[in-house]
Image 1 (cartoon, rainbow, N blue to C red):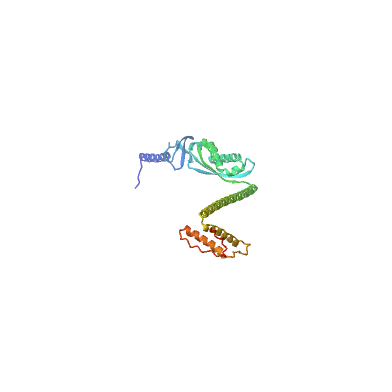
Image 2 (tube, one colour):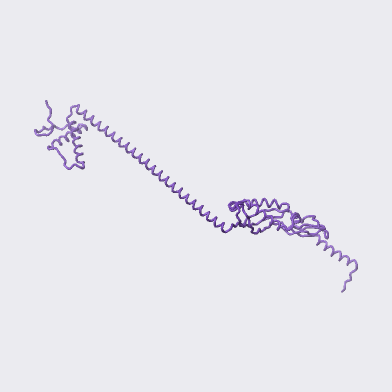
Length: 328
């Protein structure tokens, strides 16, 4: 079966095909993370955001497809002369993001190359204004200074520099060896100082301990002397009281008090002779009755003191060594 198309049908088919082509030319899909610039006869008109966009078919066209995601740019190693004329090699990494697609597309040619060269130049400038010690110990300061300088320089291009990080700083080998020797000497010096400080502290502590010990010993001697003096004072008071009691007894006419006093001193003298290291001979009275009589006098005083009965007086023998009674 053969279908025959008249002129109207052919016209409709052609118009339908043209309509599809026009629709395809007018509708543009922009992926996420990209911006498309729209040019009309070669002149920038507007920017298409991610999603579905419409342009004038056959009049407008897509100019540049700009990646607006954060991008990483490797900065290769380069030689840097520091402020103190030390030669080091350094490399870095730069993170940037395009904020204005039109400026990034039409304000600079070869955007990545421009950012790379600008970063390398500022690395030499910033690091060259510092000496080697500052360069090795103030990496964060270098990063922050680079970030401020480079971000201000690329802002007309619609770019935001988010981070610049110095990766490696490599001094020459001879300089590394010299720094190693210097660090070793510094550590040995620090160890010597710490050891001397420890010995000094130990000597101070020992002196403090000895001082405290001497103070405590002196306080102990003072306390012992005070106790000895107090004991001697009490002993003297007791001796004085005993002497007063004997004196009162003698005054009242008690012969036993005299015997007690004489016997007590006699026994103390014998005790001193017995304890003497050079005394080898102990002398005793010829008549033991004298000692017994003295002891009897002591017992008599004790009985009178504690309320006992007075013993009967024995007649004295003619040959007694005691002093004769004075009866008149």
